[in-house]
Length: 61
Image 1 (cartoon, rainbow, N blue to C red):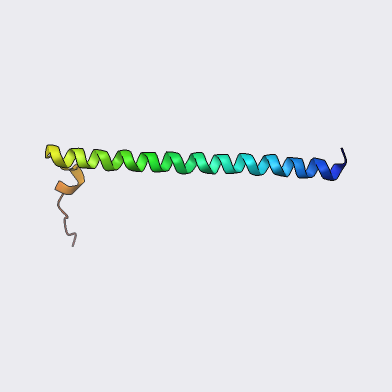
Image 2 (cartoon, helix red, strand yellow):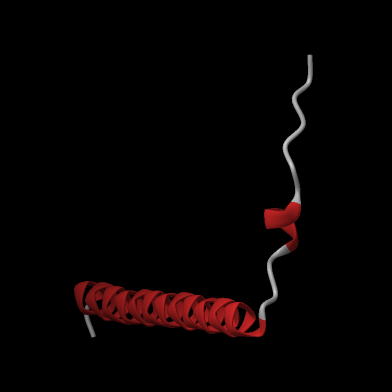
């Protein structure tokens, strides 16, 4: 194989690895987002409110 063919082969495999990493990243992000949505819906049905929503703001002079 000539040097140019090796370069093309390396670029091909590199782009394949980057594409797969991007697909996996998006899939994990989307799965986590769905899980958070399910958890919020479950908490809403169970009457559980997040802790941060109960905190009151305090004005500092």
